[in-house]
Length: 405
Image 1: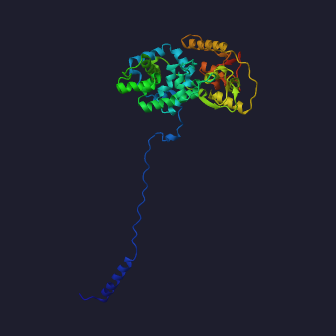
Image 2: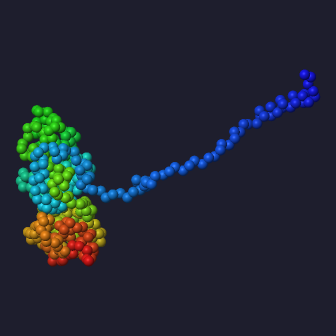
């Protein structure tokens, strides 16, 4: 076919169009925007966990979590001693309630030193947390430390001041020693045996007979009966803490008022001055600071007080309280009053039908803290119910034990 003029013109235009198109960048068509459907959310609480209010800590639960020794089924003797401890449930509960601040304090130290929680209960086996004064070549304090051991631990033993009776110093020393024992022995059962029978004697037995296996729980190795029983007793009191319901007992709740604090003393002062400023009786103050053997002793550096008493002491100390010391009731009379009050509480918990007393008459040597613990209430509650602005109470004063109706 012969091209016509029209065909020639078309042939010239097509290359031009193709060249122009090659110079324009390619732009893809915009994607179609489709809104995704909203997911169906189930009817659940999506509040972040970190924003939820923290639940109050249960001391006994935390203590159980820190246990490392075998439990209640470790040996039949463990259950026998656990039942012996709880033969009188009311009496057992009262005993635990009275020494709970010391148990909490010892456990706090055990946690700080990474020591098995059972060892906070060791004073129950040794002395039931009593501050036993040591005679010549005799053990002393709630940890029952021998004079030679005290020297090894760096605890002072003097005529008017025995650090074996100092709760802060002795607890720190014992927990440090326990951790060292474990680092060396690697078995908490052996740590208890070393504490009772002596570290070097135990090592000699291990060299001769080898390290005992995990089973049985009470190691079958040469040891004195009292040493074997010491380990059994420690496991037994821990057994009761593990499962108090099994023994028909209840463990007392921890009160923040009871938490013990180390309070620094700015100026040396008599025990009577410290007692007045803290609102404690002389007997209570000496109970937390038993290293001072005489009532005329002087507190020069620090002392141990319940939190509520520590707060009152700091306020009185900063306000420049220089009130003269009052005459302190004689110790035998105070102890008689305390014993009588304790018997009433035990009797009421033992199943008597008498109603709980509505009031309490303050006896010689009693303090608000003592009364609060005996009647299972807090110091703050007693202060609120009786419109008290401080913890100072006097013999003969009548206190309400419940809110007015």
